Image (cartoon, rainbow, N blue to C red; front, side, top):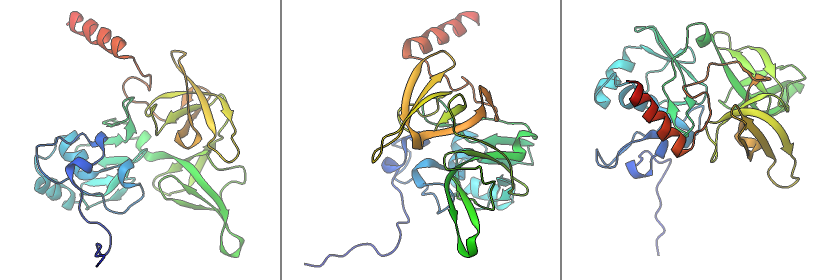
Amino acid sequence: MLNIQGRGPKKHLKRLNAPKHWMLDKLTGTWAPRPSSGPHKMRESLPLVIFLRNRLRYALTGKETKQIVMQRLIKVDGKVRTDITFPAGFMDVISIERTGENFRLVYDTKGRFTIHRISNEEAKYKLGKVKHVKVGQKGIPFAVTHDGRTIRYPDPLIKVNDTVKIDIETGKVTEFIKFETGNLAYITGGRNMGRVGVITHRERHHGGFDIVHIKDALGHAFATRLTNVFVIGHGDKPWISLPKGKGVKLTISEERDKRRALAASE
């Protein structure tokens, strides 16, 4: 019995296996763009081709998207990217100088990457969640952020789960926020993905998952795992602009009432 398996990494992705938040329909084709290896995980990223073609509608086909990126018009975090399957992810800044537009990839309350336009001033920095703080060779301390950046000689007060503000041009840390109760946080995974609220309490579970309790702007409380929590501001002041809805999740009936009120006002 021969056990023949594929050699090397997978190079294809079928449309039905693509992450749901890409919002690709079933019937337009068999395949989906498989993200290249990069700073974000495959299922937590958005390939540039989907952002430019399916979200912004700047291109109609994959070939047109390729022609756009090969003109070196698209920058992700200040670097020109010519790979249409480059995996852009949470907090990444996508800049298109030809149109003067800047976007930050953030989630809406339904857990999908939303088109969130930002100013030129805000496009100069991004936030990064600290995943590891370690000591490397020759005793050099370093921190690793959620987007794969290695920051040497970080401030000794920076610990895992804190958030650092990174200057995109230099790659240096300018400020940081501690993971503490009373600070504002964005939820980046789980059922509550895309919600924004203030941290009220952290439950420690040794040998299990720490649970963080959060309260949003309307006073609704919810809980999620520590790994899903990304601190974005001191107190209730966010360091980044928030997308439409400000990270407040509405119930189905509240959404319906809002739609009806909007339609009536028109």
